[in-house]
Length: 234
Length: 267
Image (cartoon, rainbow over all chains, first blue to last red; front, side):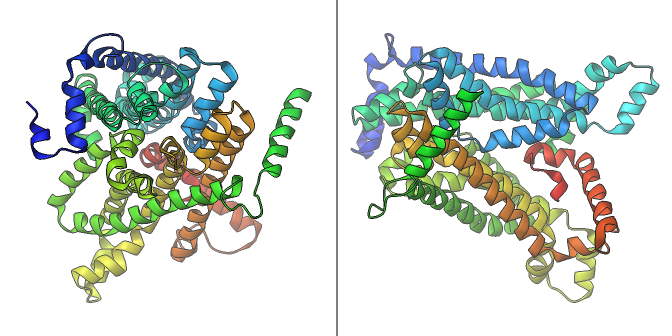
């Protein structure tokens, strides 16, 4: 059973023992519960951010109004230190899940917004002309041409945001809510390196799973003709 | 409105009063700012040092690029905070615990830019170099790399903003420059002024660094200012012409800008 302990009695062995301890897998502080909490915060934050950013990006991209303001603000937001924003919101609004979610949403909006905006803006004019020539109206152009063509870029923005949110939800444990960050924060408080590393590994696994999820979503949501082209444009 | 002014004035007062302490080199805001610069500039420079030869190799041997890019992307999926903690058993509480993960993150942005920059060197430039007797290696180093400078610097600008804002996360392991100001002076003491000062200084540092990189690009690519069909001449009219041309660029470059979100007008 203890494969790693057979070759190494230090850090790796401790982590393996932490993972294989049956107590770790049950109860309110067990791995399944913490994992579910972490995924729950991340999904809620990402959905709220998407509900804000995609319509706004479609609007600015389609009309061209406020495009410069949007990209400038998003650029500015990228320079903001996440933990500073999180701690400031928590300090002003108090401890709890809602302030944490606000900070996570604030983190997730800029990449989705910029990519949606640029995705719609990047639709080739001749495609738009063709759609207009086929008799499509403004709204039809937006939903039947611009949104599908922009979909790969929107999904990349959502993936970037999702990975960042999964990572940052860890920090949320510093302000008293659950999730995988608890292992890191509590492990640090107890000087328990195995616990900290175990929590970190779980966050890494969740982030990799998120990336894979978006690779799958891309297969389902992006039109076949667009996939090859979008792959070459990263 | 008055309350907001008072609050801002209070924050500013705190910043001035705590800027630095003579005789105590590790106390105050300035040492944290310098630490932040050290912890962010080292990964950016190291990232460039790794990305340049790696990118040159990937541009030279095309088969190398997909696996290298996938590897770097997988590492990027690892959250920074987790990577900092995973580094702890190996590097302890030294600066390297922050520098190594941040360097890896810069590679994700820098490597594709180096490779794409080299690939988009116009064919006629390449052929001219061949005709002048440049061998493959000399051509890569002395012709294609300089032509790729704008794209490489565009990558550096994104990487530097991302790194400067990410350094703060390292405060959770006791490093992190301005992040330490935010966490230990601000959050642990339930005091908003250090948090605000930390955020503002981080953003300022990112903007100043960005401006330096834009300036570096202008100095490194003098030909970009001279030709292009719209440059020519000084004076208000020429400047207005240039500005109009620069404003027209973003629409063409949407795909690049989507990933970079830098102000494309500078390119």
